[in-house]
Image (tube, rainbow, N blue to C red; front, side, top):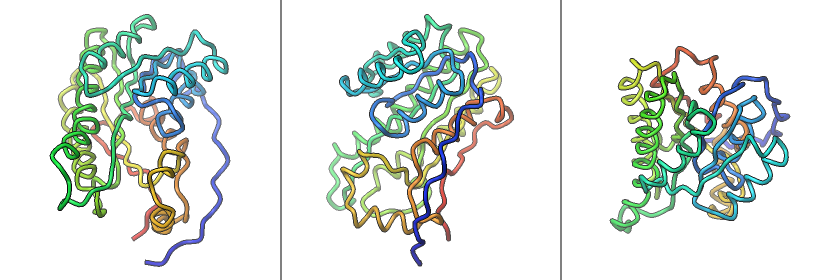
Length: 266
């Protein structure tokens, strides 16, 4: 496979009012990754409120303060949330109740790592599956129940990965978890369709942010970028844009779908 020359990232796309008046909950929303990008984007798109969840209290507080200063503190709330704990998930959704309850649930929390199947421990496997797949399940279940209780025709957007489709060395646990998120998305969509709730997912290939750069070698990043048609990683906001589309009325007939946000070429 020939590597492609790196093209410049496009200009940032401003909001177009796609989520006016909605209450949005985002997991793993602190820091500088996809969750943080989508939290900002939903406010730019007119959401009445965003509720942020994350396990990292300092970054969560910083994200809450920064978004509150820019968009209004009354539109931003946050709760420390570990998606492996049911009580934390419920507390996160409780924080949306003063705004009328969750209308859009964006499940971004996930955990990766690199280990050969030959060396992977039960603990490594279980932790990645519990955060990435079972954590998403807990949030889908809890948000769906809240939406049904409120009579809300809500939307759930999950974060999967192209690794759920494509093989990558050292990623058996993460690949299994993300493939599970895809299957969960399709089946959950059928369970809640009668209530007018939609469930979809994005499947990014490579989105660049500081945490990824910290845990990935320069050589592997260069190889991964070389597989992309544009020769570059996606900006986190480019993934967030597709999540916003799936959360908006522009995708009103989509449910149970997994949208690949990737420029990978054959």
